[in-house]
Image (cartoon, rainbow, N blue to C red; front, top):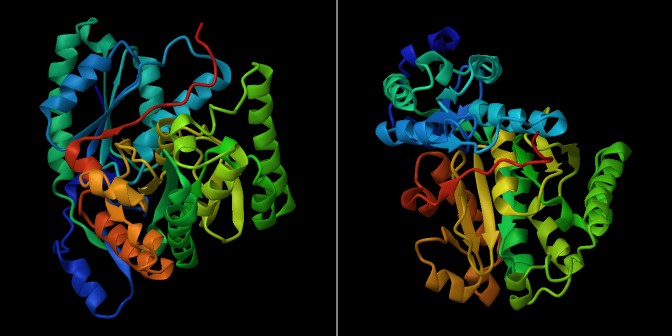
Length: 414
């Protein structure tokens, strides 16, 4: 077993009281949240140990370990062997990125062979994260013994993580991701512009934000290029859209009926261009600093776009692997999927959705759609909820366990 501890982070108990952040804010030192300060200087808004299964051979053992130990979160990839080239690089980048996310207190890497296990572990530890490893190589291929050893190691990591305490943190420490799913007319009219206002607030405070779903820039890419900080950023955005559009066309697939999907069309969206105009509204109005690859951490603060799939599970895992601590997810008809790593705040402005899904929708924006509340007032409420969730309040998705991650594949296996 390999254990890497970055200057004994888990042996240091933070002295700040649980409610100290509220006193800090009341004293007039500015708006912020209460987070877990990591050794590399970032803040986590959650504090679990990640049980990271590297491939399908160890998935069940990793799941048993996570089930045995309170204070853990599981991601067990069904892939991880026989991959090569860009696909292998993308897979590794996502696994390492999830382990490096500031919401993760420590990571237990569960692998099959020792070299691959250590490769991922060392890459995570290089970012200052406590890491431990177990592998089938160490237990003569005995999955039950792997589970027993892993349970003991994860329990120690989780107990050490419980010694950490929240501290006051500035809004500039936040990396926000925004996503939409099962969109309808209310998404483009209300929910996405509302999320965009929060993006602007985060960026104006010195924080970072990202949105993706490349195929849903189609027909609106010229508007994104107008927001680019540099010409090369705008060119990269256009090239990313054209690559995906060409890849779809090469297979003979017509986007009509696929994107927008059936649920989008039922909700009043007639074309991909109309959907795109609503979708990009959730990215706010500030200048775009750059185009990120899947799982690529932004080099600085500001708003970024990520060249990634349009469907929520893969898109959101790309954001979490890039380091996003929290997500806003706008929906029309409803969508229960949430990130396992980053708390996901569900927003809807559709009156029947917020009525029918009271334990899914975290933020009701239907008053804006009905005309009894303006967008700025709703943004004040949503921003307050965002900071509250970052400080520990759980979303409905967290409470009900509607959480997962889904790594992106970009090629076949050997």
